[in-house]
Image (cartoon, rainbow over all chains, first blue to last red; front, side):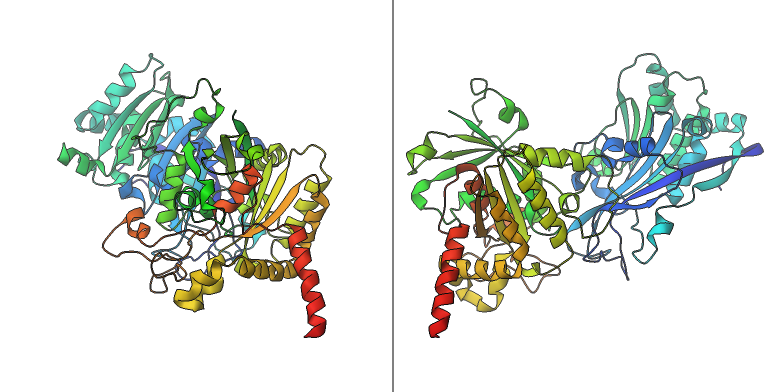
Length: 261
Length: 328
């Protein structure tokens, strides 16, 4: 499942409940029908009301209002990605703004968010697998209006069987990778500080988001589970705002910014 | 003396609430309203901190600074085609309103006014009839509280989709509950029929001339109210609450050419624009919103314009028409 990932003996299961917030779409290009408004368009049956309160895109992003300019200009097609822990959960979210008259349209935009929630323990033990799965599968695409409500709103959780990474191989990769030094330095230096800290990467560091998330996955996999600020680590990609705690962020448009500097 | 006024914008989705708000300051700046030009109102977006500050603490406005606040972002989104307001929260915008010209003394002495305008997605207050729309968080409770705490309610209804029955039942029930509520602070309700320019699309360069005639607006309102009998529920609010009806258009009519500002050559619903420019500048050359200041100015000041009509005015005309129809 995780291409090129060093595999140890044994598998484990990672599981996420999901919630989609946005509008239903229909037809070619995913045009929003006139009757469709904002709503929860998909929900796993296992999400309890207490957890659901945490899944507002505003709360996950720490914003008062989610606007298109909260998303890096080079990430507006696929949307921004956020992974952060909260209240014993790991929440992974992708949000974008898409035209109501369908992909490639020119009309009014609407927000479309896909949110996964899983156990924090699963994230702490398998960060690389969680990020790899999210990089590949987490898409902010609207649900189809023709799918029955009863199915969409009582969805089964998402499950993947993932290989346990080989710790020695992860260590070897991290020791050689040019990006690892900066990530691990931030995590080590801020381990006891309690302060917020942000480390930015751009297109000069990683050509794509997927490579960035794979790199962060390796760096976090290298981190001991006893690391004191595990719950404060957040990962963001294409998100123009910073997140509280220890934030590793990828901003593709930084390529231009660095070139200009 | 400074008076604070909370105004709640309510209406079905895609009705034009956010567009009305986004075009508000430009409408006032361009005097594109039905008030006397001698009223000389000025409307300036301010921050929440400025709204909340005591008058003595209020800092002097920096004349040259450009506020990159929520309202500026809303205006930019509007220029770029608009963003549907989400249901995750209600959104407050703040303005300072002053009247610098001639106005009745009882109005002038109350000013300037600090306005809090509450915008929200149509799905929250006016969802489609019978639909149980799953919405995150308790934003409904927040909006209900804000409606009860507001001094004015601006009901924005899309004129050309008025007979759309998807939300009329919900809106009628909302008005009933509002009329029965004892906790409300409501003093004024303005029903603004939006997208007025669409009625004049085929009139070409004569569109603006006809739209500018209050008698035309009155006729249109009478006809619209006949199609929306459920709006009669608002009579239950009177006389404690002043109810007014008006028309407005965020896209408005083009400057110089006077036609409805809806470019048929662009995909979607877009205003006319200069092709060589981007963003708000591309539209500003032709854009003149129409009467989008009316609902807010009446909500704040309680002052009628040539385009705000009471039930008494609408009923009087209706009686005249009924009488004349016998002779026709």
